[in-house]
Image (cartoon, helix red, strand yellow):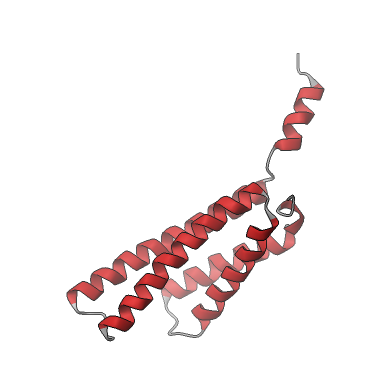
Length: 132
């Protein structure tokens, strides 16, 4: 027979679906930036990058840092630590702003939709992340 006390105890510690969705969207964004960084790095190595090597190398490093930070935030948001929530909003805001300030293509559209959707999710479900 089901023990209602045991069930409510499990539910008290269960993470809401919004937290899982946010975590996986952060991971997805991180993976996309990682893949795009590897693709861009291959363009740098074959000479088709179109800009100077030091500038492109700096952009590559920033892409990999962005990917790592997004995946790190995914972990922190799942822990319910308030600092990661706010840091995630800041990183998403910077990503959205920088996406809009450059040439706009398919990659930019995908990033804009995912980052914008994730930011919207974080804002409307903010109480789910502010546990600690």
